[in-house]
Length: 153
Image (tube, rainbow, N blue to C red; front, side, top):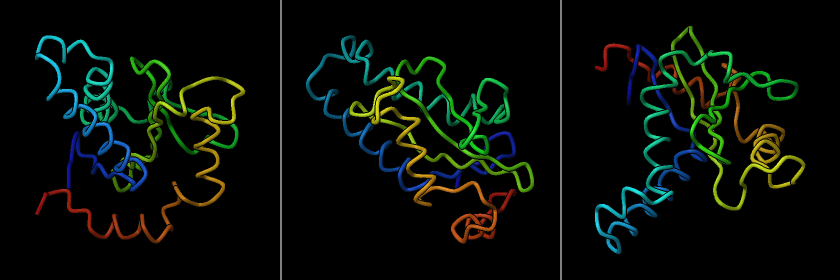
């Protein structure tokens, strides 16, 4: 359980799996490259930016206007600053204060408007299928809320 700025931070299975893959890529690179080369590698930079976004930047203000989406995704948010063609999707609640990290695209789903593998299109598919949710009545979210302890006990 992680809390930041009084927000309980939770990773959906889809997001969690992607970050596990990203960390594995960084570990593999660290065995092959010198430390100074490693710090300059795009995968390492991406991992660092995602880490900073999820633990520092987004919890400062998850409803920042630049994160808002429209139309079918208006209940969700996305972070893109410094991520190039990658997008980090999340939902949040202020009562209780929870941020749910839902999806981070990979190399096969880089941002390209109009492409069926565009991260927005992929995320819409997850929403339509019910794989991810912002709904506080979703049983998974209810479990997270029940498990939420703002005091960290």
